[in-house]
Image (cartoon, rainbow, N blue to C red; front, side, top):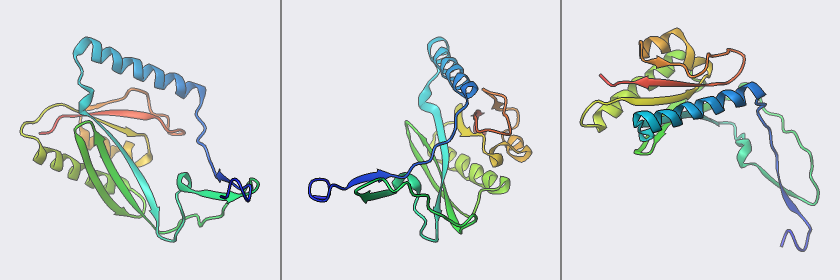
Length: 179
């Protein structure tokens, strides 16, 4: 009805993260390295845990991927929001064998809070598995993920696919062997 009678269409308000040409090449190299490991070493990608966080704002601000506006023309809107609105952060780990989540944190993830999540993740993983084995843990290079405390948590089991550049987001692969 909105389309036919009122000539209104849904417009998605979007924002994009810039990806540098160098980062595209690094992602391509990373994918080729994983494919080589699968072909040559029998690497089981079913043991890769992909992790990320999502923020839920308590003031009613809507996550922009879920934001739609119906109108007869594109409004080219930019919505203002408070810089530091209260929020809850949910952290999740997903692999082909299941989901270990969510871990909820009030506010922003700090290095200490992130270590607490990792400890809970590893203890949950150990409780679910009958024997320890090699796991792969993927995370982005957000600041709490690359602190001295975080690397101390993983000890010598950290493998960098790309040298972290503190100015942009890059992926780091972490190899964990539950004790």
